Image (cartoon, rainbow, N blue to C red; front, side, top):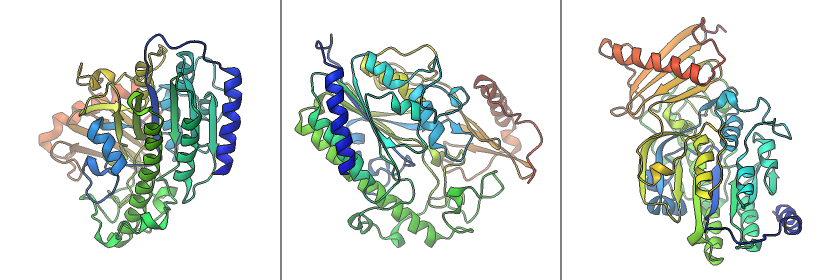
Length: 442
């Protein structure tokens, strides 16, 4: 923790010498605190309907703010979904239009970067988060960039302390954009003992879609995340993992609360918009027999919550991508959104000016899974293990995705409609995989 604070002190000293704030901005603009958790599922905040988890500070955001119920990472062409997710977010571009090498030190020409746009709009930009599986050139574009390695019981506390140190020294005359990305609740899921004691694994509920095994080969049943627990999944083992997951999230909530307290002490709360999300969710707990994020079920959705000045209390079922945050944050900051950005501004939804930004949402995972959904129905297509499989779910009546309607003759028209939309989306987003080719044999 001391190392992070020392690095921050040095960075702030350099920044004050090189970036004097010449004049007040032409109009009041909010500070923006963007907190991006690592692997946090959408339903792990008590105020969003989970009575078994303790998250008082995140509850406060939901209770006074606006949340999106259907936020998605578009997907990944690798098992480390967080890397393309974070790269899409910071560039505002879709899966196959982000740079091929997210770990490059410098962005290729013509690639927009969110911190660059905000700096040009007069913001001081600060990032503190993991170096591994994050967008290297995007992080490097911040005025202050503290990258961390590893993941320990104190990771959430160390990242919160770095944020607090920045806020304590920040000159309030200049608006800030803080991108705080603690590497939790990603495994290994460890929390201080006091938070672990909050949860009795034997009393936790498993989801309705708990299964000992996934019903067929989805192309990624033995990826790293899926080997964190034995097969077949047992209720006892899955509850143990849930207890660890919840304890880590409760610890993160506590540390975030310290950051919120610092905002209040410095008189910044009334002019700071807080955005809370995660790079994606995951299936921990045996949902569909799975543990990880290498799939396209609804449990890979993250939370997405906005709170602060100008943000009304409410919620939306609109279909949104995480890379929609690029133009949304630019809107909040009065910054320019480059034309090549593919994300959609979500502020008109938050302000009540419109109800949606798209009619369908597309998802992809490697060369073995594709997904399309609209407001009600969702189609998943698989090619793996020498087989083709299709799932069709009525999310209105079956939000846990248990009843596969793909073979129901009554749903033939819906299936054909969604298959057509899936093909159109693959073309729109330049999907390079010939998904109509024969299934991959093992």
